[in-house]
Length: 191
Image 1 (cartoon, one colour):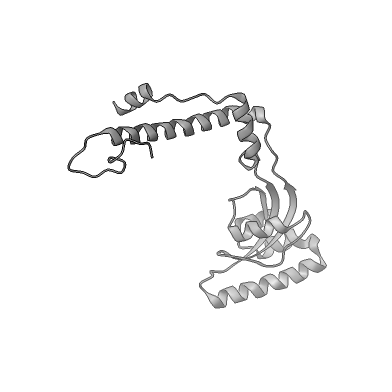
Image 2 (cartoon, helix red, strand yellow):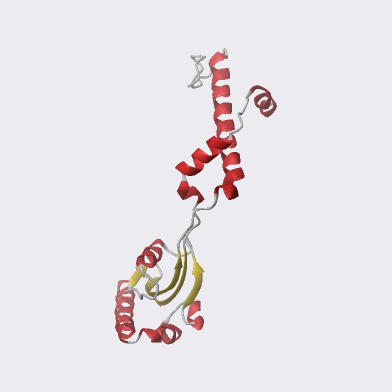
């Protein structure tokens, strides 16, 4: 009954083309594809609550980093021999990864690398990593025509919710309710 009343009493305006374009222009980050990374890594596993194991992992990662500084082409071989990740069987290849696919520390290190670079030791909750960035594809702004209907649906839903909340607040303000205190019940004005 409440939904039917709101549908009957609350008018939701349709967003016109100019409004859709303004929203698109004002919010480019919402319509930009995330970056993609093609990366390899070597994981020296250690729990960060085990200080001795983590120190040993740091030392091993530093030794591997020194070897890679002299012979970066050995990355896949060293990953197969030393990495504790299942990706070791693939020479450390993680394939294509994007934001949120790894830990924040790993992702932050990955963002700072240029294609072909090998990071120094990177500590995460899983241990210490050496990361090689093979390729980066930066995010791109999607064309307006591709997101027009998504913007329309978002704006209409946003306006519908706001209008419904205002209508309910108006009803509460007009109601003569006794025995319970509701916000807005003492005034008919929309809050």
